[in-house]
Image (cartoon, rainbow, N blue to C red; front, side, top):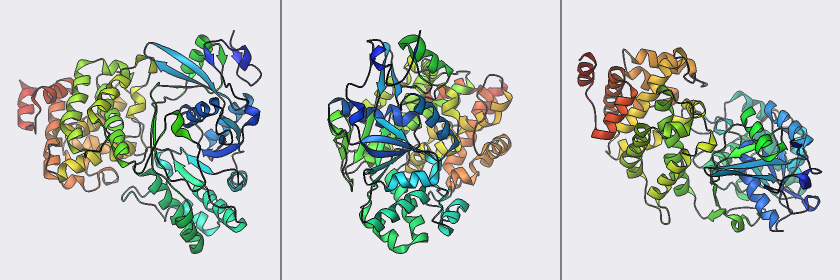
Length: 505
């Protein structure tokens, strides 16, 4: 019979479950984490738990916070179990579980309560996992959207902020007024230059509230860039049942993840930091090389297999990667068109990282879903696929495979909602993508002219032709034969007239 997770039941858990060996009563908060979901608990909280197990840095425990309805539910679940979380590493040869005790509180989900916590001088790092869409960026420019209605509202009434960034600005203003000094703001979201992005939003809002405050923030507050990596699926009844059955723990909010973790952070912290390098975190002067490697190989790799896997009827990622055609398609695309545009960085072995990614995607224990990879393509493609495409076009390198990836996405957008068993189109721009994909059957450029996604890429003649030709090939031969053709022949381009002829033969 499974035991409800709590501080009192830790000693009764099975010997195959790791539990905190440190006295949690001695922990003192130093980190306030906003957006406390699965990824934070599998990643940052796990690193801190390892550090506390060494008896070190016990004044860097985590306080949770959040501004979304889901944060209310998460707070309720974790409160009932004394802020403990079961983290299960899903190894291909078997799973291991550890109860992570790095968290000591969760602020009520209310603006005033969050600001009070942020002003506490014990809080020296404010970390964020608020998703890539939570930064108030203009989709056309990728820059801070100062005209967003919620930003305008916070600028008009900074005493009652409604956004996370309004709360950060108000808290920093109060700390400055009290002579408390600033905190470091550390983004853990999958954004290129996530620290710079966060800085632009905080400073941009502060400029509309108090220019002197904005100047102080620029000078005193640190916003290090970071690369974070640990595949962490959403928790469902499947994961809760796994934790109960395999480890005897009744956990309302367990986390399952892969055993791989990587965290590379620029070593710029204005109020100190825990010595996380002792438990595997890499601190560097500049993180962009690591960041680009991850975005272009892992995240773009997810995007590259997502739509063809859905079109071929796969529901789980490891099963799709077991298909030789999908496996070879990913390898060919990365070797021919992703790796060539990555600039050499000392100490980084791109091919070794690529092969590690393949191993990770083939991990059957993960149960990662194709539907997860297919969702929100209008946000994922501009961050993971289109930058590589722009680089290749700018350097005159082949883009046939990248054009094929876009054609597969387009075809998926056209047929997903009408195909039984296929993940439905789940995207904030679903209506626009669906209509553009349907129009592309007659005029292929219609999909590339979705400006919110592609911006000026539709003006590239080479991309337009390759995209149109691949759409015709997919329609005539189907997705499997199309990716096989790319793998076998490595086309620099295809001829839609050949595709039409093949389809009619």
